Amino acid sequence: MKKISPVSAQKSSRQIVVPRSKPRRFYGLGIPGVELSKLAGKLIVVEGADGSGRSSQISRLVEWLEGCGHATVQIGLKRSTLVSEELELAQQGNILSRTTLSLFYATDFADQLENIILPGLRAGMMVLADRYIYTLMARDMVRGMDGAWLKNLYGIALVPDAVFYLNVAPQVLVERTFAKNQSLDYWESGMDLGLSRDMFDSFLKYQSIVAAKFRDLQATYGFTIVDGHRSPDEINQELRQRIETVLAGK
Image (cartoon, rainbow, N blue to C red; front, side, top):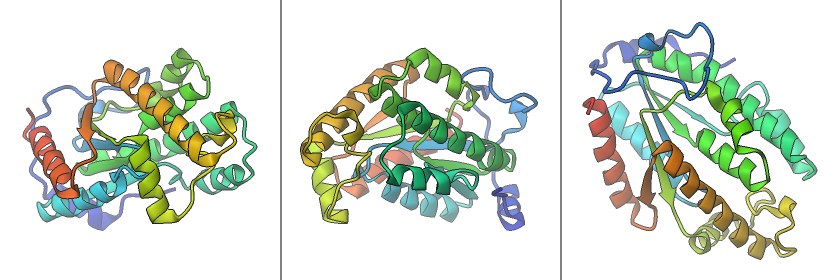
């Protein structure tokens, strides 16, 4: 189990407490026994495909926030101490069924929610999520999972204070991915869906379908779409300005 360190907790105690513009709530039934009024921190989510610049932006936001005196903690996909290693091993075989894959990721999220997100928010920290339930839902819907079932599954999730989706065209994503890794990932290319025998072609088709699902989710959940084709500095400046608004309780 991951725990918030005493040092981090001490940092958070020095934060300026700002009023919340909206009451904290879950998307669904949530987790029993959680006192939402005591979750004083902020939950900021940055979404986007691999190659969108998502992780780099979060690193820059962490540096900025901590420089301003805010204690931070991060979460992301496959970071749970409960199932992350098992999920990684299972994916290497490229034989997971869509339901098994979905439940693996849901368990990974639930563990981090209980042991990182909620404790961090109780301590008044800034919790930055390198992807959240929206990526998981989009991926599952592309694989034919029922939308109502997914909403119920992720009804335990807290509604974030802000969600930013870095929108980048699939052609740009594939170029960035090749430049960084010199290869494409089986699952990020949607090879399990039989879209194409060619991984490059499958990647473009899969990421286009995922992007369409994100547009559908945006209409439901109302997160902010950010143009990810601009320079990292321009994107970071926009994210900072929007987060400052959140911190001001507007």
